[in-house]
Image 1 (cartoon, rainbow, N blue to C red):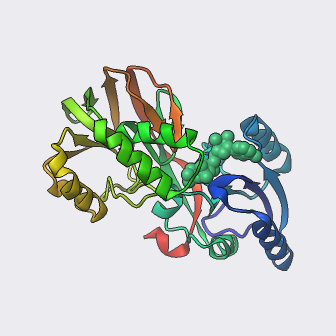
Image 2 (cartoon, rainbow, N blue to C red; image 1 turned 45 degrees about the horizontal axis):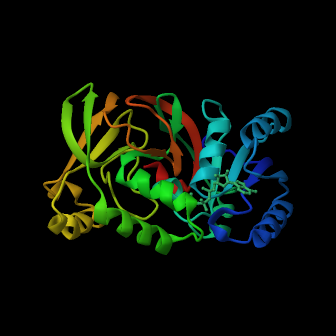
Length: 301
Ligand SMILES: Nc1ncnc2c1ncn2[C@@H]1O[C@H](COP(=O)(O)OP(=O)(O)OP(=O)(O)O)[C@@H](O)[C@H]1O
């Protein structure tokens, strides 16, 4: 499919529970939009059980021109897994609490504007990662943030405030872990607060962990926050929110094409918002331009 092809048949994947947002308006907006633009469409609502297999089957039989994921990072990851390594592009209507990949791709965060990309877009092929065979479409990490993600997934309430509260509570007693990172360029060994693996730029919270990452350049980054004194936390947060992590003496960014990470203490890991078991030795592979995504036209340069 050419980079600016128009879509005539779409499969929408809607997560009814993501971001605590009612999806009634979305279903109506999709129906109105597709009728107005004479686009055939189907809606698949996720259940949280067996969605990957059912979606694979739907894509095989329905043969949509693109699939559009409406939900949070977990829904986007599910949809991306379905079409990764195929020519079917993935569009995103961001309706989660973080929406990290959509922000890094410049996709509008407003529902109507994101939907309008269906008729005015370009398609960009982006690199994706695999951590011990687990696909990663945005950010994976080990250490502090993965612990917060795990606690957040068990929390009774959702949203940025709950996330921030859990992060603060865990931070007070958090102890750094020992890692070794061997890349095709260099080796790091030491204690770290967290270790982020990504080829894009920012968490959904807008923390710019990797401000210079380019999503389709065949290179990814391992961003380390090394052990730091509690007094340095505010300056570090300032650097992370102002896109100047390299100005902190406690950060280090390793750019590479492949890496092996030794997570000696088997500390928690998360990929795209889901906690995963990766074991103590983690091989990170980059899959060049494996995923085709629907992005605004101005994102091509
Ligand atoms: N119908 C459903 N009922 C309950 N859980 C569901 C349903 N459909 C999907 N899920 C679960 O929703 C999770 C993915 O949610 P998603 O990440 O899209 O939204 P979010 O968590 O609100 O957003 P974010 O990741 O941006 O914080 C998965 O764990 C999936 O199993």
